[in-house]
Image (cartoon, rainbow, N blue to C red):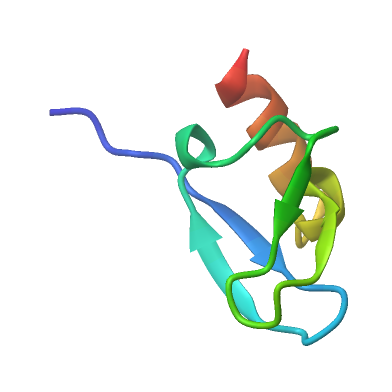
Length: 61
């Protein structure tokens, strides 16, 4: 069974930090809500690092 990849997220508003599978996230340019404070931003704005954003794009294509 292959290992599942995860990306790190960080909410711009409440600074909650967590990990998600790219398959559970909307596309980078779609809206996404923080599970703690319900802030809404594009999914790409929740990516903790540029590498997380690159991985999200690569794994969703």
